[in-house]
Image 1: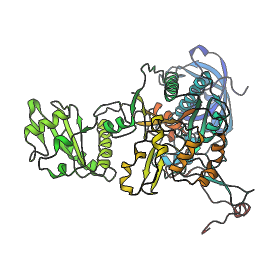
Image 2 (image 1 turned 60 degrees about the vertical axis):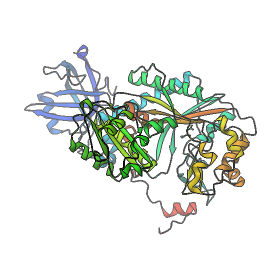
Image 3 (image 1 turned 180 degrees about the vertical axis):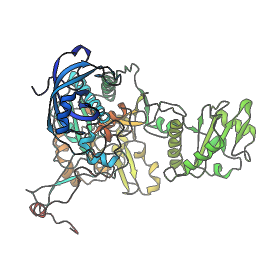
Image 4 (image 1 turned 180 degrees about the horizontal axis):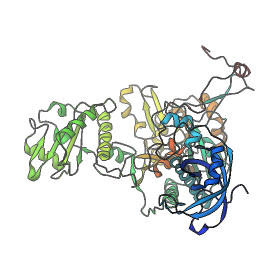
Length: 595
Ligand code: ASP
């Protein structure tokens, strides 16, 4: 046998046993005529003791960090026990060893607190993966994967694979394309998600489908996005929105219990998109803390303060118990909201002192009575600070939403080990793209409108004469049968009830500015399938990488992916993407401009 035990397995009960271990050398510590070696594998670390005789052999055949060795010996009780590791009570008195393979000195230490920088760790990812910290993340990922599969299997879902070489599936990003050698000049697209396939599977009668599957989106990478990422992708037939919300609330609760031992008993909060936008300025609100947005135009206007009088929107948040907050900290916050990413010019504050003693940056325009009126409108109490932003509607809402999160962060209210889940529902079906001068689907083109809004969609022409007036168009008010699951301010899943009637789907494509020919050319297969008895259906997909990262208490998804790309979509280890041989290009019939 190559090994009788793993490096994480032996305990006091094994004392006296003869064992064989194999693994990587973590450290070599020489003390005169004896040497201690820590041997590591996926399961842990065991201490090896090389006595005098073997020590001489070690001198002849030295071993170093990351050498792969096999040792046989007797398990003994340690005199100096190490409580930090599970095998810390024992050591192995080595009787024989064999170097299975040598190793160059690794470019960084294979320890939890490695000295390797990001790029170096990515270049040598196979070494980085030996580190405990990364291994734990992958173990957690596998646990989430297993829990999801168990749950879905118990609920009668079938894992069915769908192809990667397909035709475009619009999910709001650019497609990655793959040239076809056999059909020169033609291209496959990699799926942005299995959306249309899972819908076809519903038409075929597989009423509960799932897949833990790669999706590919060629987006300008914002921080912490990956061009290929994994979804838990699901679809069900003969369901209404509530059936889906209940089923997948169940799945997430199951995963939390299995993976984290956290029992979530309450039903997830549900709020409409409109409610979320009004109270949090955000469609993925972090509800671990309050500090909701207060709309205070009515109370603030008409006091001769130009900034307020001319503002489209005036928003406040109440920072609780902020009596200690210094002038310096407020100045710093003002700097923070002036950063280009936030883009506001000024921050107004009102300090609510004891017994109605107010102190504010607008004392010149607002007497105590007016300040009290604002404080009452915001439900602020003694000791609180009210922070106010004013300006253009959209920008002010966005900035206040960010300031709220920032304050939550600064005050330690966004606790990593607290998990607050909710559903956001009733999203708008359409968004108007001023750039393209047309309506676009907010979720994707297969999402059904709310039943009560179908008539509005069918009876109205999508065309808009004056782009600045799009909010007045009946389409702007149409709500979708769509929902997102939100966890601690992150959208972790999203889906919708689908259109399953051919005429409504055709109307949808037309609303998005597609001609009949275009819609047939792109989606003829789906429209055709809807002619042959498509059942009512709906589904959802969860961002698997993100879910794992949050469960692992991290904001970054890269550490939960075995071989991730960097933020520029670049694989540092493979050095991909890269040029291909001229002969390959010739075969594909491709001429690269400027190549
Ligand atoms: N395909 C959608 C997405 O990737 C999810 C869904 O509607 O089921 O966001």
